[in-house]
Image (cartoon, rainbow, N blue to C red; front, side):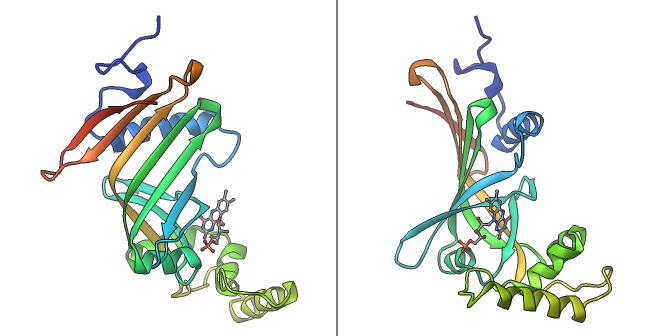
Length: 208
Ligand SMILES: Cc1cc2nc3c(=O)[nH]c(=O)nc-3n(C[C@H](O)[C@H](O)[C@H](O)COP(=O)(O)O)c2cc1C
């Protein structure tokens, strides 16, 4: 008989009041079990007409104030976020039969935070950030390769490549989490956390 938590869920759901602490436990486990990119997540945004779009990004930081990814600030996703800051993230760890959904509002990280992260990227990625006008139409691949060469010449010193102002990070400040664990006969386990007005988190079970 598997051990259960106070809500009758498997013990991996813990008995934590704060969903970010539970995220940390599941994410750390996924880092040991996923074959690659345990930090990959599907990011869902919607444009001004409410038309949704989803794509993968990589989680680069998280803490009590949010979940951070980096991208081009003029990209399709960023245009969506600028008109509608509501967004949703979904992690799926196949090796663990687990999913986490997080919903909240997105805002830009500070220039200092973006600079600090940008500096940790390898030279090619920093040049790529300059060369790629992400999500715009490319006439040919050569157009991109020429831009890469142009920026390599402009910034030959690998220790001195400034961050383009159109490249930064977005932070999703969570309002809701859902933790999902796959079980036999599709009788899965689901735990939802909702941020309350007093700043605490409420917990509810969801039917699978
Ligand atoms: C596993 C994976 C991770 C990715 N991580 C990022 C990322 O962190 N930032 C990013 O801008 N694009 C990332 N991409 C590319 C995006 O999925 C997407 O193609 C790109 O950001 C343009 O999206 P948009 O046109 O909706 O803005 C990743 C793709 C995959 C498959």
